[in-house]
Image 1 (cartoon, helix red, strand yellow):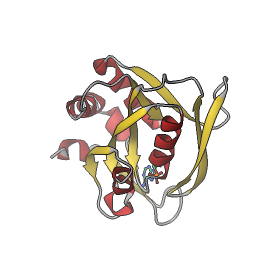
Image 2 (tube, protein in one colour):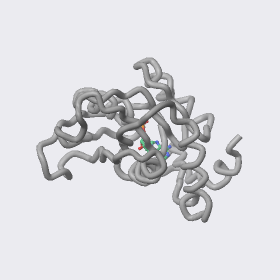
Image 3 (cartoon, helix red, strand yellow):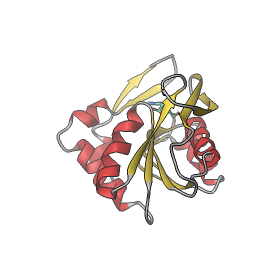
Image 4 (cartoon, protein in one colour):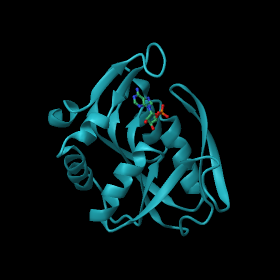
Length: 176
Ligand code: AMP
């Protein structure tokens, strides 16, 4: 299933450092039907009403915005720290390669808002788990997360499920 989408994702070995197989979705985006097919299948997997689709900078923004249109939801930008102009709340997280900090505007979501978290890829889950902590700190109800790509051997999706999130992805690359 979704082999058509998997075939559109290019693997770049040893980027950004030796040993990392970078799953490059820019090739999927270049396809005339790549983004539309992702959105169609992600929308079909959404469970119940969603008030906001939250995307993680930068590739997550594309999928969050595209999903928000058919879902008739708002878009919440989860940015790298230091980019948002208003008062923010932030969370630190570990990447597959390095560490970082993400932030949202402190008033980005009303308490009780139902938020769907979206990103292009889940690896260790560090980014997504920090995003969930951040959104919950802001008062959001986060029960679903969707990814285009899962790297199941890195365990991120399982860790996210352990935090009460229903996790779906379109394509899995076993290994790393
Ligand atoms: P993680 O926090 O380990 O789940 O990493 C997820 C984030 O890092 C996503 O925003 C991805 O865009 C990026 N990422 C991590 N590993 C890879 C990889 N092997 N290929 C492409 N992107 C990756």
